[in-house]
Amino acid sequence: MTHSTQQIRQTEGGFTLVELAIVMIIIGLLIGGILKGQELINNARVSSTVSQTKAIETGISAFRDKYAAVPGDITNPTARIPACVGLCATAGNGDGLIATDAAGTAFDPGVAVVASEGGRAFAMLAAAGMIGGVGGGASAAVATAGVSNPNLPLPGSWKIGYNDDATMTGVPAAFTVSAGTYVVSTLALGTASTSDTTYNMTPVQAAIIDRKVDDGLPGSGSVIAIGGAPGAATCASAPVAGPPAVDSVYNEALGTVLCALAVKVQ
Image (cartoon, rainbow, N blue to C red):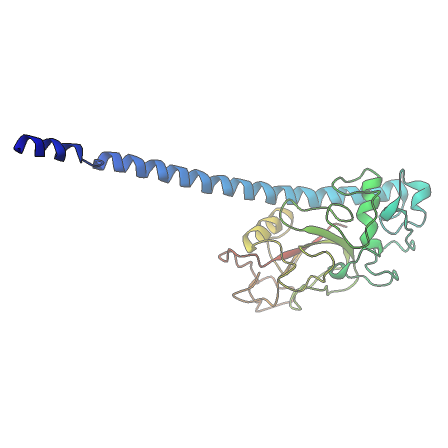
């Protein structure tokens, strides 16, 4: 009887501490590998976004050199741009600026609509072979990612337009925007860039892009943060001095999607 009991107890033995330690190490390595992989993917998307803004800037410059006009604003696109149909085929007014309303008189890329020079600028660039990722010959009743506007490597799409003064829809009043042509990131192409429904990146992602392209500061330079009133719980901190708001910083400790960006490309 004693011998049988000992045999049963021997068969009921569990994992040793060494075995448990090995299992925990393997689990830790797997988790670490997954987290590192996610970080690498995120960094790659951010880097691709930076490259995309530079490609758009280069494309606009090449378009101007070739056609002596800016995309969206050219007065005779079908006669000059190969295979220019659909969105590409609507002429601009030739004033040298990318307007963001149907009348050709408003200049605020934060509210660019498809029935505007800003709405067809990417289509003209694509038809001219200056950028990819846009359907140059496609028509769209509303702004559509991948048709009228290029997708970002991060979530969202780009709008484009000329900004004519020190303000832009979505940019905090404390931040100063210089005049020029901007691409504006957004999740909702048909909506003004003013609310969290349009934000498409975290403060960390926005900060990295800003540092790679500009000065790394949300309220100054050629990259400006969009993300509600500056404060502790939004994209960027509130500036004390300024303008320019050089003492505002991105709230990189916050991991939620709180930002969009306006990037000057011309």
